Image 1 (cartoon, helix red, strand yellow):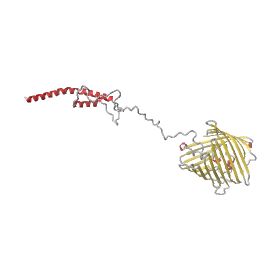
Image 2 (cartoon, one colour):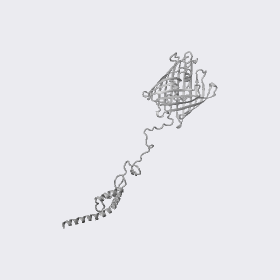
Image 3 (spheres, helix red, strand yellow):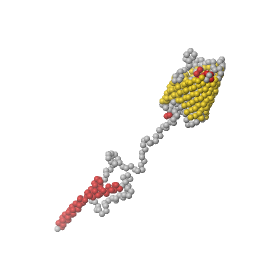
Image 4 (cartoon, one colour):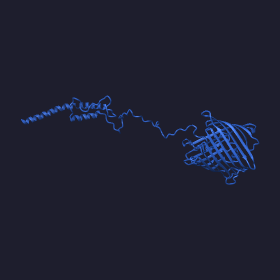
Length: 443
């Protein structure tokens, strides 16, 4: 009796379990799908970046909804499978393909384009006209203080002078001429500079042809080729920088007639110490001139020392030239010069003494100009000058010159020069007047 009751209770329990498990198995898919929707709503309510709750939307509480019974373990596993199918796949950092990338933060700053990024090493453009057009053959200091990045690797330069004159000694006959038609090319590297120039209006076409080597600090330089010997400040000044049309009575007599200085084939060394009053020492050996029979004489020596005690305001210099230095040395000279610059005022003076084949000589040169700006491009430049030359010894003679004029300047490209000179040159019986007008341009 008792055993039958236990057997009957066991059968009833088995029947109840079967009856209860049927509805549970039938409702599992629906419960899983409902749980998946609730999980999706929860994910949608959360902020994808911060993991918080989007404003105005509350995330549902975890656990089964109110009024429902707790899920059995089998129902829980089915629910997790449904959630796995309902949730979108996670995007791994290395995944590629059609997966949608996360939305960037709204406060993120856009990355600047490469062209908009500042380049601290970018060089500033040089101002127009900053580059010197003067040739090194005309003025060896033309590029000394120009920054290396502003120096052109290859320079092509030139100039043309056209002159009209009327001389009292020729009864004021008008004369038209082209005193200079210069063209040249030069190159500038870190330790090497070279230049070649020719004057198509001169019987001696080749003017400058030299190479200049320098160390990194530009303290030491070595010249080789044809260039100006370091003698007479008036000769070393570039013709474009001179406010007068020529170089004057003294330079013409010493340089052109007796061949002291000027352009020569030679070898020259130069030392420049900017920290010590900008001291510059130049010395070289040069090819001698030809005598009356056309025979080349022995080598000449030339040298110059200059200082700038007040930067570029005042320049003091001493120069010398000895012709046929290794032979008779019948021609030699020593000169002392000074140049003062105060704004638009420029004053230069030079004293020369030495010996020529006919005897000793002395000479004096003085020149002053004042540049007055009219507009940003145009300027007026009045100029006055005086020179004197005295020959002593077996042949005595005197010469003098007074010059005055007015120049019209257009930047550094064009100038018009009107000049009046009253001069007594060696060989003249009486002083005479000369009027001249010169138009000059360079490129």
